Image (cartoon, rainbow, N blue to C red; front, side, top):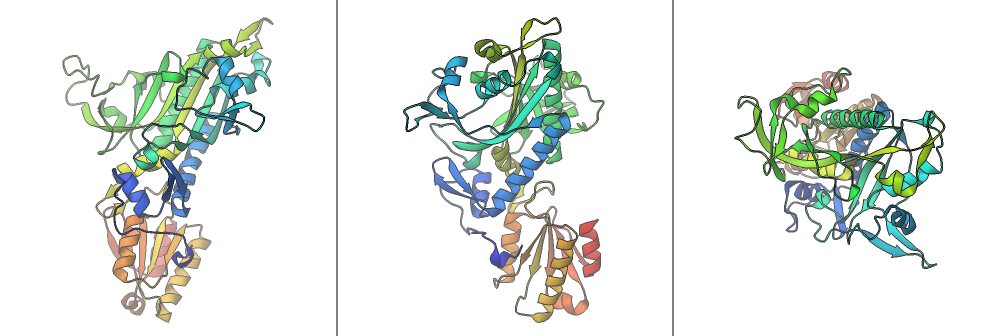
Length: 429
């Protein structure tokens, strides 16, 4: 993509309404624009990141064995009345009426709808375990939306749901999602700490929330350092061992009773980015969702739900990966891999070298943003540092004469003079 044709409304000054780093940088880098309190439009750069996160989440759900569906954003109130949640959920639910005066709602979550879908589609235990998920926009009418996408009213969420014939298989489903979540965060370069969580309006008696470590995190966390060294892609990993590793928020942690030796105990700040729940027959009993068991008798299905805040993760990643100049994206979620900076777009030789590299990078499948505008070199460097692409390739008059380009790593600011061919080989390796 050529920057001269790209919608990237960069702001030089930090907007006064932005209180935290991710909100500030997302606005300054032209990733989002606010439409109403807690409601944002995602501009091209931000939407590319959102899609990258969504892709990793989708791949890990598919890898675990879940099947993707898509449920609507607007749900009939009657399903929520049947489950007993319509009046209990509270003012966060956006309640609406259609032109026929039927009560509807903009879904804050989907346990009720997925239970109805299941009971109308599955009759035999032989179809279980069944794991379904979708990635869909949700709405919760927060009384004080703030911090940009970290606590907005409208947000993109992956919610998955498991259906099993008994507790033992339901627990296996829960454990599979537990590991899939840790793999998902690790692929994004994040260190996630799973902690026992409150079940809240979702219900149930077993839950874990996932806190990713960030210096600017909302809450203090204490954890066993083993979490920092585990490869969660290892197929032999034992979820029960992971659950036994110590993790606690600052309001629960007690130094006097902490079981972790001091040399293994770590302290940090965390941002919650996902939560999983086992709630058994809470919804299947209320909504009569059952299957015929091995003996031919009706059996209420055991259920769980598993949520990841996809749009919230965008903000969390920036809270983890930034410096004084702007965002520093990990390659796995970067909107583009390379910023190709032409310092002299009026110079034919610079244009020729930059265009040649641009074409070759694109042909090799490398996502590249060509900074081909007439801005000053200082402005271009500031803009590219702000948006934080992992690599910068600088084409300038002196380099053209010497037959070289400058290759810069945004992380650590490492710089090298290379031939265009060597830079291309490095970026496509």
